[in-house]
Image 1 (tube, protein in one colour):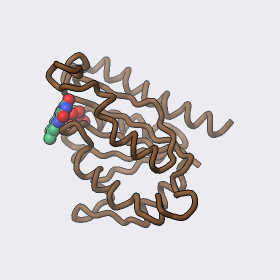
Image 2: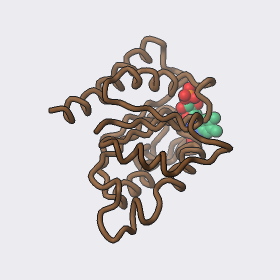
Image 3: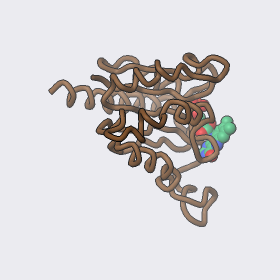
Amino acid sequence: MSTLVIVGHPDLTTSRMSAALCAAARSVPGTSIRVLSDVSTDGRFDVHAEQQALTEASDIVLLYPTYWYSTPGQLKRWMDEVFTRGWAYGTGGAGALVGKTLRIVTTTGGAEDAYQPGRLHSFEYDAILAPLKATAHRLGMLWAEPLVIHAARDVTDEQLTGLEDDVRDLLDSSYQALSA
Ligand SMILES: Cc1cc2nc3c(=O)[nH]c(=O)nc-3n(C[C@H](O)[C@H](O)[C@H](O)COP(=O)(O)O)c2cc1C
């Protein structure tokens, strides 16, 4: 069993944040990475292959840039296609993802203090994660503390190096816990 990182950036070649965090994740033992833009054909997924990868993991991480207070469309489509009835839910028993953890690692353009009622983004960021939290709950997954990195444009190269370490530590601690 391992950690599976699903990378939902639509084009990593144009990414600073997701690309750096994805590269950091690659160096952690016991971690598999699926870059959705690499594993989709004409925007569609091999549902069986995606479900197989999820089955083999015990911790699922969704790594993506926040787009319009949500996941990028490709990641939403992945969830729509892969979390099927009869597999993830509606099985008459435990769904395939029951007991696995779901952790969100996301970056935003907006500053953290603008994510407040009455401010630019109207809601605290935690409220924006409600659909994903509800999905985890519906599928019997355990919600792990999200890592939300705000104000991506203001993150210095030095801070980004620190964030890469944070992601490595996060994934490494899952790995240590699994191996223990
Ligand atoms: C289509 C689009 C929608 C975006 N929507 C939001 C948003 O709703 N809230 C926000 O804080 N930032 C938003 N951003 C900014 C991105 O979150 C930010 O550019 C990204 O996290 C930077 O990561 P990257 O370097 O990996 O691309 C948006 C950017 C794009 C291109």
